[in-house]
Amino acid sequence: MNGLVYDIHRFSLHDGPGIRTTIFLKGCPLDCLWCHNPEAKSFEPQLSFNSNLCTLCGNCEKSCPNNVHQIIDGKHIINFDLCRTSEECVENCPAGALSIIGYSESVEEIMETVNKDRKYFENSGGGLTISGGEPMAQFDFTFEILKRAKESGIHTAIETCGQSTEQRFMKVLPYVDLFLFDYKETDPENHKNYTGVSNKQILKNLELILENGASVILRCPLIPGFNDNEKHFRGIAGLQKKFPSIKLIEIMAYHNTGRDKAEKIGLVNPLKDLSSVSESEKKMWINSLTRLGCTNVTFG
Ligand code: SF4
Ligand code: SF4
Image (cartoon, rainbow, N blue to C red; front, side, top):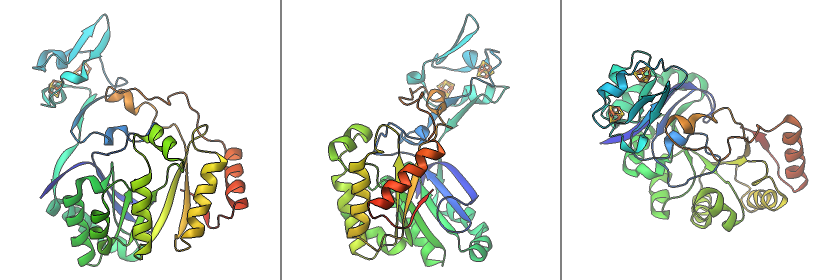
């Protein structure tokens, strides 16, 4: 069985406990305004262009069968909609300015990579993390990897936005040691405006897995001017109160280090001008959450 992967990070320290191998899958059912990985949203491979590397040599214009590239008046213009990811331009670019994001990998290939790091997992308390995109969206592939890893004694985690069916969450539950579960916004309407979907199903799934003994770290992206408000902070505190088994509240403070990523794949970043969160803002957030009763809050 194959899945569409866009990256694999070995020796990762940010995607769960210990040293981990993180598999990034392509495709997500949400469309968050603040997405840090816009290249992960589409379920299809995509052309990516790094204008800083381009020397305007024109090879891509000559080699592309679909007229995607044009060099006009010293500018490289790309019609991303015409691209069929056939890769001729990538192969003929001498500067390495072009690439295709997303490639097919089998479960066996993934497990071969993961198994290379087994001794690091054992020494550090680490393991395998499946991230994305949304791992639950390529469900059969994700399920098979988690099952094989878990059955061979590897610690397993998934980073999820929570948007999937209850049946799928229940099926995957025995094979997931840790859920890194996003909680993005308390108000359902705002959630829809910011991410494209309501949070109703997401909350149902969160409650379901917690009631069935899942180990969960709640990951809360906080975006200034969008969800850094009292109502949402109360929502986070309320969830922790209702489910004391939530291991940790991890605040993911907005940062704009990847703000040019969207342009590379022909998209627009709606928050391009939003600055990263300052240290004083972070302190204020922690104070507010603590005042509302949150314990065990940290920054991810
Ligand atoms: S990947 Fe293929 S279709 Fe897309 S721009 Fe390059 S040559 Fe053209
Ligand atoms: S082949 Fe590469 S360096 Fe040449 S114009 Fe195209 S993207 Fe730029």
